[in-house]
Length: 291
Ligand SMILES: Cc1cc2nc3c(=O)[nH]c(=O)nc-3n(C[C@H](O)[C@H](O)[C@H](O)COP(=O)(O)OP(=O)(O)OC[C@H]3O[C@@H](n4cnc5c(N)ncnc54)[C@H](O)[C@@H]3O)c2cc1C
Image 1 (tube, rainbow, N blue to C red):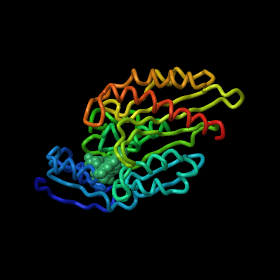
Image 2: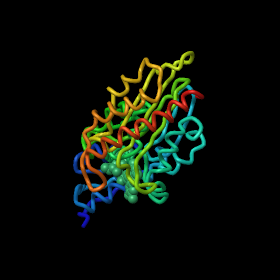
Image 3: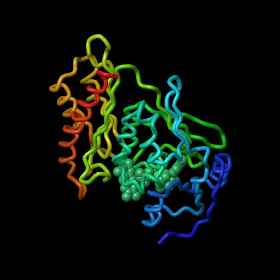
Image 4: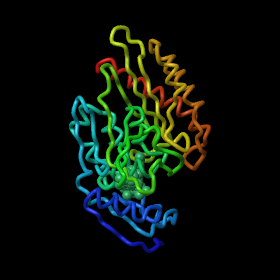
């Protein structure tokens, strides 16, 4: 049963932040409610004050400018990201990731900001955004700060938000030329939470095909979305071939700390990381060649 709470429905960021600064730890925000209602029903959270931010239309946007890159308002629903022509053109991996995130019904309610702030290491967007070197804009009544997506998750369902802060924007720069990014997740049925997921971004040197830069981020492989930095280092400075990608998968697997659950043992997840890192990397390299 859900415990009683006082309900607010601010229409502006300023109003929402002033409620947060007044009630701090006693308050929780709700956006699409796709995760929040579940954990409220489970009794994992019981806020005294519930701040419903879904009506803040100023945080529902997708903007793209080649210089500034991509800006997504925290209240943008998954379905809008999936269907956005500008994202399909410039950040195709985000649109592809959204196609396999939950059902259309959930994508029509759930927001990208809610997904990230929920802090589930199995969530898909964080890994893809880490591979894209994306940043988050956090706001409080005292001002704003920018944090790397990579720094945002602290532990299972725990993120780096202060009690009086909210997420307002996701920012991603336009990737350099000859960069390709791909995300592959292991799911039993389309739209399931991934048993593991791998996001890989590769930048190739224009003349010789040497890997100039690499980013590998994994979902559901630890208590936070995990960056596999040792595996990245195996790729950087080398001409990419299949053996090297398989090696990167092997190394990434050693960097994980997966849990065992009904969907798969830790051992199975480690094996699948090898497969999915290689699979995403092959796609990323192919994309980089023509980008
Ligand atoms: C059936 C089902 C299947 C799913 N499958 C997947 C999947 O395959 N992959 C995947 O990644 N996810 C999946 N999800 C999770 C889903 O994507 C998230 O539940 C959803 O995106 C959360 O967004 P929301 O707007 O509903 O957030 P809410 O549930 O409203 O909020 C979630 C958390 O974020 C906080 N919050 C929300 N917005 C902000 C903000 N702007 N600033 C600060 N705090 C904020 C809330 O206080 C709460 O703690 C699934 C969910 C369901 C129900």
